[in-house]
Image 1 (cartoon, rainbow, N blue to C red):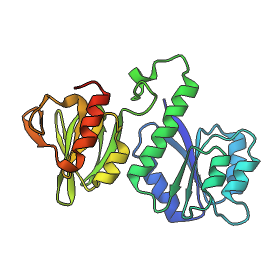
Image 2 (spheres, rainbow, N blue to C red; image 1 turned 120 degrees about the horizontal axis):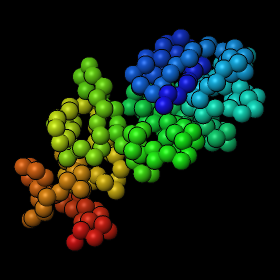
Image 3 (cartoon, rainbow, N blue to C red; image 1 turned 180 degrees about the vertical axis):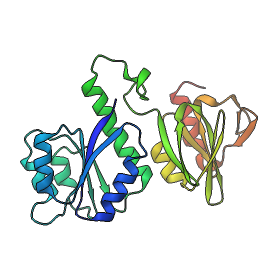
Image 4 (cartoon, rainbow, N blue to C red; image 1 turned 90 degrees about the vertical axis):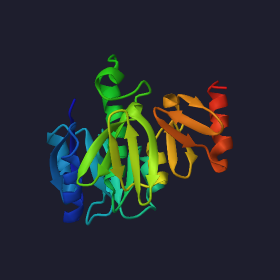
Length: 245
């Protein structure tokens, strides 16, 4: 199911960046870009739009003023270089708040959040987790990872473990290995903490892919992964909570 969207920003480079990002996502249909809020208001009266990427600070008519004017606004992702509007964004019930410069992985996360709501609102009786790339909670069951010149879709349920290799992370899945410049902190923000856990300064593992644990080492497929003292207590507490032990 396609989601119609527009981008509004008085900075040409910011508009081009959002357009470039949107073109990489197959369920986004970018209807147009606008450099001011007034022309956006006219467009919204004549066209069905599901999502607006909206800059806040614009001349004459701000993004906030636009939202306060629209009677029944679509989903909104605010894009801004300033963080002081976070409270106002909450009051206006926007879906997400992106700070410039916007990294692609953060853009993806925001869009997936909107798409989950969009599918739920438009297909209330459909089991969306079976047909729309969502899991049972309505969250996406995959992420997009920048790897070299490619942006790769990685399904969470295929990840075995993630290994740190100097400046890179290598994602080991059931059928591939994917290198990325993401660090462990950003990777953990993308992963479900109930399904993935860090067990060593160089490893995150998928809990459901564990074959066995012995002498503070985890066996996943043919890989033996150490559990370091730094992460040992949190790891075993998580297993106890899941009735593993």
